[in-house]
Image (cartoon, rainbow, N blue to C red):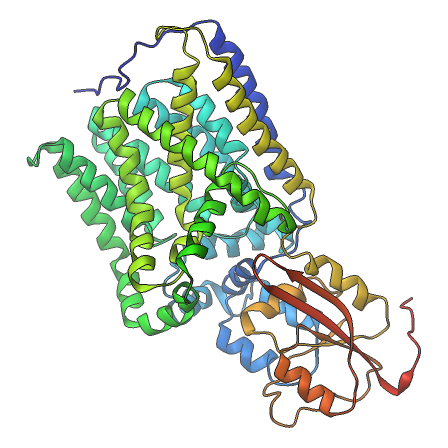
Length: 539
């Protein structure tokens, strides 16, 4: 039988709702606009360039052999590894992932490849795909709120918070799979609730489709499936009901469909562990707590690097407010409602948290893995505000809570506008836009870098096509600067490589340095002028 509304308070349609909905529509329009503008402005970050590598069909091993051979190449030649290769085909994408990144299923990378073949390989083209997935998420959030709370007004407020959440804007404009995965998991969650209320083969077929596509987008779909299974077990009384049977068939079908890729991932688990070693790097509990605070605050506001340490204290009042909102959600809704969102929160975040506390590492600091947590938080606080503003629960609408809601939405809107219009993401990677003009002011520059393979693609995107590049194969073994270049730059040289250059009496001169006190990250650009020739402006 259909589920009844879960709220313990009667809901009506007072006139104030029209004002709330109108305000939410304005906020949503701001969020939609921010997702669609300046897609080509910001520099690629490292993971985006790896998406392009996978979509091209080339493997990392092939790129190392062809481009990291100690020979001079140009940016134009290097960029062929960032565009779809007709020679490699879609099989190259699948094979490269299976052999070198089995923790990433191939669906999004194949979609990106097809998208680039249709619309080109510009930043705007490649980033428009996740932006579209992000836009499609709006109505699904509304649908989920209807299924969960039977409250349209809550759906509007939840969409407004999602619209101006900086973390979702950043994911919407990043050529990565997380916008698609979020969309699919919300569809699966909404169809699960609909399948409980009104069981039908059609709705469970949609659920199977969403979970299969979700698995082939990201293996974290397994945590969502666990949350859904626990939810059904709790409220089916551990009895083998028709709904539970439908779910078991659906889950079994989805797991069977993804089993070939799971088999590949298991056989290549050493590679997967190696490529995710960054998650296990030691991090103190204090740094973990600060990272959690920054991640939580990123759901509501974002800022420049230099203010991050100071404004991270905003996580304290936000945490207190969220704790109160969760308590209110638990107290004012039936168990079938609050348990659904809390199970999604728990299964998404707690495994990473426990692993970090017991084994060490920073798994729980990667906020892109916890997008469903942010969605759950948006729905919880949307319910909180609509309940507090509701005139039928014994008191007039609270001006205080109205101001708090306006403050949170305004903070998000300002952050998103600033992020959408900025050259970088809230101050991230300023060097990606500040270094190229220095290099471009001279004729025929040569840029030498011993950066890691993964980082090299990102900075290469910022230079003009005719800039020459050199990635030393083994700089510690008698590296020599090639002849024929007057203006040579060392991009982010390691201390060891810089020492090798200095030993050759080339006297590199520091011309740029970026340093971030909060993360201890530094990056430098050095310049070598051979034969003391004057700088030749590029015509």
